[in-house]
Length: 344
Image: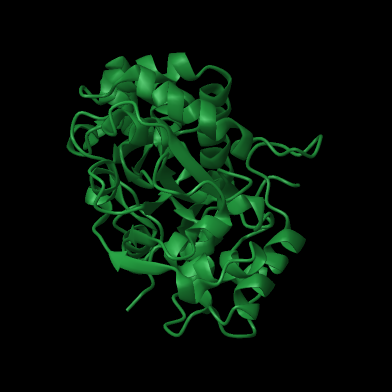
């Protein structure tokens, strides 16, 4: 069984977006250009999971014609999380999707040794994995997690990485209890008081507070201690990257333009997303993108959006090997095609 990576959903009526509304969006619907679309290569793109604001940059690239200018007729469908998205890429059901890089490393370096996919650009320069609690639950710092009960989906990145995070944050992992919960019910469980904390992305904070009806969220980002770990990366199949390197570069450039625009103008991204996801709440999209901004832009000057660094990835692999989560021998080049990525 492949390891599943961190995926998150929210309850109905929150700031996030409906998964179902985005299916089938393409650039033909954006500009009504029916004739010229025949000369464009048809591409299926999957979001990381559902249609949250954190994935809205794909709609921005679609709406502004970046994909079309690069030679692609793109259909955007909701993804189902890193594990399922990798399967869709390897099987040819989709050509591009973002996955959590840690999840990709776990898939490639774990017991099952999943192959057939390669990363070609970074979406977030740091992992957005986190524990989120609510004020009043007695959790204000990592050490407070001891003797508490947390809820997360089995196999999620947050849960899988917790022993490593705990070691670096001076937490006794044996004093922290995890119980199973489905991704779509986690925020509701936290808001109702049936758990003291949940595995989440840092950008889930506004949605948690909305569902919790004004209660303040306490966010414990893993990146405070695991600074070398990347967040989401764009992947394609190894075969497609080998056969079409220039097309991969063009697609990545188009998507990254949408990403940069979304971070620079999250309010605009919210309005654009509403064109494609009728249940979208533009203010919710903007809130997620605002929180995501520092994770997309590297603190180091001169590093472009989308860049991946082999030495950093090697350190990430070492962290996972040191905690016994992947077997020795995995190299960054087995998961990332550095000839196609923006240079760090």
